[in-house]
Length: 254
Ligand SMILES: [Zn+2]
Ligand SMILES: [Zn+2]
Image 1 (tube, rainbow, N blue to C red):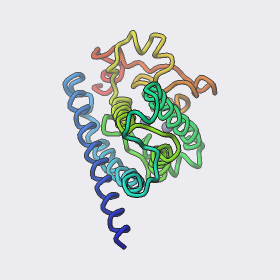
Image 2: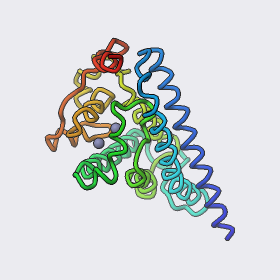
Image 3: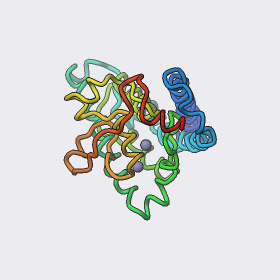
């Protein structure tokens, strides 16, 4: 009983943290969008309301497993999260960051492809694609089934793969910033990066926007690796260079 209450408190606290993190990050990037591309979201207000409601529901679905695992980390040694930098060599820090992002990306790519099968799409993924075009508030706008598939990834990884608590924080930072910025409708990274050699392998807003335009292809989360290997990479959308006027903002204003 005592354990159940502690786990419940941890799950509620984590839900509030995930929801608060969403509101702060999406709110910040929506504010930035208003400065960089004034008027881009003006015609999308009813859609933004829906995006926020679905996202807050997702926050609870993400928060519960995260809260349970956080309790298990602190009280029962369930996870392989470590705090002493001397346990593993220092080169393992960047490797563990890469492993977490790669496995998260792999899970996302294959489940995302599954969600695009017609029956699955209707049930679980249409909610996310109801954002036409998506905004910074759409980062966690998922149907509960899709949110559940996303919510188990990091809890599963922390049980399986050792990670320093600081690197885990970095994973969350990358996850949060890319999740929001990939939907906000303009490219914040410089053209030389997006269209250069590194951009061939990294997913930013220009790549994910193309997924929302076409529905088919560009299923990845952080890397273009699986899209390239499986022949589903359909290239980049036309969002203009960073901070420049874009095809989309002109479209939205029309
Ligand atoms: Zn999306
Ligand atoms: Zn999709």
